[in-house]
Each structure stands twice: as C-alpha cells, then as structure tokens.
Amino acid sequence: MLFNKGHNEDSDYYFSTIVIKKYPKSSKVCECVFNIALIKQHKQDTQKAKAACQEVIKRFPKSEFAKLSYKSLDRLCIIYEKEG
Image (cartoon, rainbow, N blue to C red; front, side, top):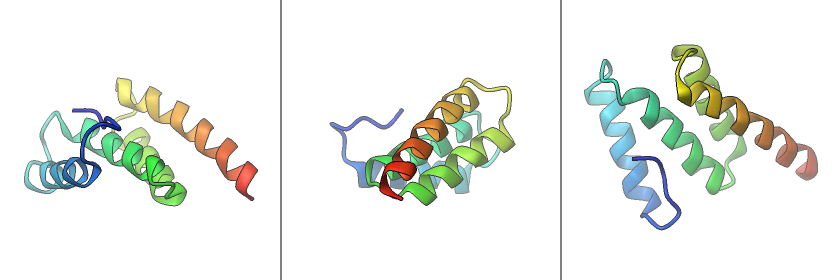
C-alpha cells in the first residue's frame, strides 16, 4: 500500500487515515503512518512529513518502517537546510 506517485494522493491519504482511526490496533497502522509521511513529503509539507516519520519511530521503533522513517528524516533535513 505504500504511496506511489502514480496513484491518487488524496485517496491514499484518506485510506491511510481511515485505517489509523478505525483500526488503531491493526498491523497496517505503521505502514499507514509512513504512507502519510511520504504523501506529505511529496506535497512538500516538510513539517507534517517530519512529524509522521517521528510518530513511526516512536510508536514502532523496531519496524522496517522506522528504518525507512530515519532515512526520510535525513532527506527532509537536507531539503529543509536547502530551503532555509
């Protein structure tokens, strides 16, 4: 379900938020939060992308998505430094 630039971002975002709200104990929540981070990053909403990555790391520290979130945070810091 990872966000793909070829898909509709809004429907991916909506689906992810529904899963998080309706099924908070689902094994897919981690992936959905990371998916939101990718969508926000693609929309250049750096602060919300960063917050979503940090949430993945905090809530799911041993997951594969936590590792990916660390990488995304590194990229976001580089982007932020270039913009700042």
